[in-house]
Each structure stands twice: as structure tokens, then as C-alpha cells.
Length: 416
Length: 161
Image (cartoon, rainbow over all chains, first blue to last red; front, side, top):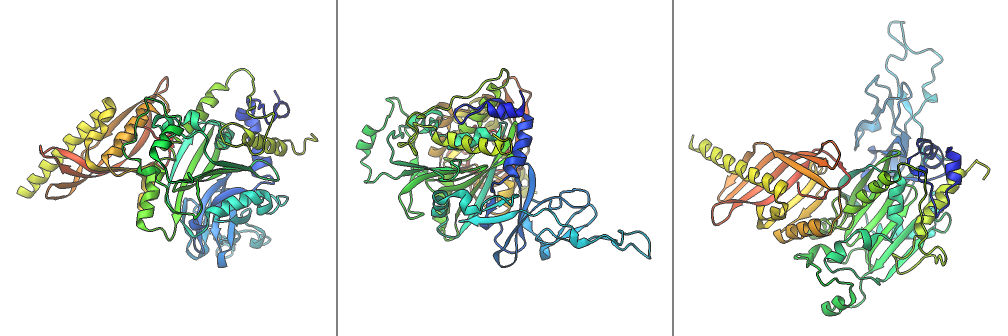
């Protein structure tokens, strides 16, 4: 089936399985999504805290470097030497002395903005060799991206057509991001998992509240599941492909007996010997205990108790992605709060009690869709399609929202 | 010379403990918490984070009851690929021995064999340990910090390293 037919066969509630594993679709995504009119996450402000601090990352499969410039300016450029295409910045993070980035191969040197500044033996030696006289050093630079940020989240786009970042995110998503970044933050650790699955399977997973209590059995096994939680879901106003879920803390002080009666606690539930990892502390200044925000195409901002993180999907190939978790806290955290964040992080990440299953869930989808053509069924609450549906866990509106935006971008220029 | 002999004796004791630890995690994982003292900690993070003094990693447990919760969750709630893990721990190095406390490091490798797949290396790294002795004189972990060389793992992290 041709790429175009595969896309035409797909609707937000029924995705042709080839959309996940067709290499031509993957190549088209690079062009129309990752290099298209879309802002992609690069990093947190605290990862480039000062001038000439940098972070190497990716936009789609393209290696991109984010650099802190003068007076808080931010630069991003494709990590590719104009000479022979070598990767200029070879470190994941660091500080470039004097803002100089030098390709190790032939020592072509660039400044923090990615502009070419010097070429060794440009004029040759003793009248021999060197670059042609017509070579204009100012005419060459590594390819720049537009950079902007909301809260401490820095994004970039290749596209001149992309709207400004705040318009791309929409007011509700900007509010949800700025809710987290109320004070200056600091990175407190990083981990990553290689998931042998297409990135869109994980993008669906983070927008899918339906699987929460069904795949992640930690809460039910330990008798902690409360079915009718006070939740709120939002979808961005413009595209519908970003979304957020939030759950509020219980309003009254917990009566343990009452809590027990209200839970769907199975009779044989086990007891957690040490529940300190679940303690909620005063932190951001509101009563929201959980917030999971998926921003198209490739980042999730989360607060689960005191575990604050961004999950960045690095797209490797049609069937592989890396999920990079960057944990952060506030710069004014006392040592005891940092310790509590470390406890809360046991709930999340590649090893976390309520997330260890996600890698396996999207890998078994990858295994299962091989073979005959077919399509998914994303129908939960499609008839009423309340937007948003509460309580969470009963609809797939945000998953359909992802596909609505994805298909629109992928079909752009096809005269659909 | 007596000092050297004492260190050799401690190293032999720690190596014996690690042999036991490997046996437990690979054959009898529900007893893994018994390798730890009551206030024994278990922490897994990347070498990258450790070198930058960033404390957060994969897991952070401060007491044995949390390790028992972890095993109960892994054996009764969590869903992850069916696999055999095989731990190999190299000879330890003793860094400090004062009173009943021993600080030691040891390199480790964990191989993973999933059903119908050829085996792969899941993790390599170094244990940074602190031991105490129980009343019977046996070593127990007061703290095991697993510092991973790899900054990424395959699919997820479930069973103990």
C-alpha cells in the first residue's frame, strides 16, 4: 500500500497499522512534522544556565545543539559541519570555552550562534594551497532553528511558517506549563529507556488515561485505587494534539476507614509496608497532586506527587525510540524536599511503580501489528465526545486529538 | 603485614557476600531484601548523574521495608518482559574499614535473556557498598549504590541489579 493510501485509510479513530512501521511514513514525518510547522522540545532552561552552556539533542532524527547566548539569548543549530557534515559538538552537555565550537576533523570553528568563524590554512602556506580566493567565510553557517521558551521549557522549529510558540501551544497548555515553573528549577538527575516501538505508540500512551488503572496494577494490588478521583482534562484549543490530565488531592483530611470503603480495594489486596513515597507535600502551591501534559510531537511534562520530570521522546527509527527522563526540582528545595522527590521518583521512570509497564505495552503493540494489514479501534466515548471527559479513564479523546493533528500535518500539500 | 592480612580477610568476606547476593537475585529474588540491614538503602543511578552529583536515578530506597514492597510489587503487580537475568560480580576492592563498617566497590555485569531471543547485556557498572555485621557476624548491606555505565536501559528496569 502506498504511503498516501495508508494515510488516507486512517482516521483519528482508526489508524492503519502501517502508519507505525512504514519507513516511507517515517521519512515523511521528518519532513512534515519534525522539520514542518511544529515546535519540538529541546531542553530546560536549567540545562543551559549560562552563556556558552550547551546541550546536544535531536529534533526528529536530526542532531541539534542548544546553546545559551549573550544576555539570556538562546541559539539552536543543526549539529553538522559545513565542510563534510561531521558532528561538530560531540558531547551531550557542557560549556564551550569562549563560545567556540570546533569540529575535530579539520578544526573548522563556529561561534555560539553556529556561524563559521575560522578555517585552518584558509590562505594556505607560503603561497601554496588553501581555499579559493572566492571562499567567503561569512556565507557559511550551521543551519539555525527558531528558538523560544514557555516556563523553563525550550522549544525550536525549522519552519518559518510555524506560528509563534505560545500560539502553537495555545493558552490552556501555556497555563499548565507555567503552573509547574513557578520558581527557578534545577535538574536533579537523568535516566533513559530504549523502547523498541514507534514513537507514536508512546505519544498515544501518554495521552491515554484509559489504560491507567488497567495496565498499571500497583494501585489496585496495594488497595490504593480510587475510581472516582477529582480529575480535570484539557485539550489545546487550536490543534487538539496537546493535552493535559490533572488530579486534585483529596479535599478533606483522609479518614483511613472511609478511604478503605471508597476504594475498589480487592479483598486480597496487599499492604504497602512503607508508603512514604506516596506522601504529598506542599510544593507548587495548589492542590493538584498529579498533572501529565503531552505536548505534540515529542515531550511530556509531568508532576506525579513531588516527582517533576520531562519525558523527551528521541525518535531513532520507525521501530525504536529513546525515552529520556529529566528529573528536576526547585533551586530553593531544602535537602529534605530533594530526598522526598527521590522517593516520589520511585513511582515513575523506566523502573517506576506506575510506569514500568509502558515500555512493554508499546513494544507488544509493535510486535502485534506485524503481518496482515489492519487498523486500530480508538472509540472510547466517541459518540458523546465530551471535551474533556471526566472522570478520566473513560474516553480516548486526547488520543484522537493526537491523530487529528498528525493526519492534518501529514496530508498537508496532498490537496486533501 | 597484619593490616594487609586484615584487608585480605575483609575482601574475602565481601566477595563471599557478593557470591551469595548473586545467587539470591538470580535464583530466589523474593529473598533479595534479606541481603540488606533493616535500614539498608538501595539506589540505582547512572555514572553520568553520579559524576555531576545529581542524586536522582532509576530507584531510591532508604529502608528494608521499601525493598520488600518493591519485590511484592514486582512479583504481584508489575508487568514486564519475561526474562532471565544473570548477574556477574567481579572481585571487590575495600576502601575503608572502621569498627563494624566496611566500604567497598565491585564491578558488575547483568545479562538479560528474554524468551526466544539471544541474550544481551542489560547493564554494566559498579556497586558502591557499605556493609555492617549482624549479631552473628555476617555481612549485610547498609547501602548498595548501583552506578551504571550505561545511561540507557532496554525497555524498562524491573528486577534488582
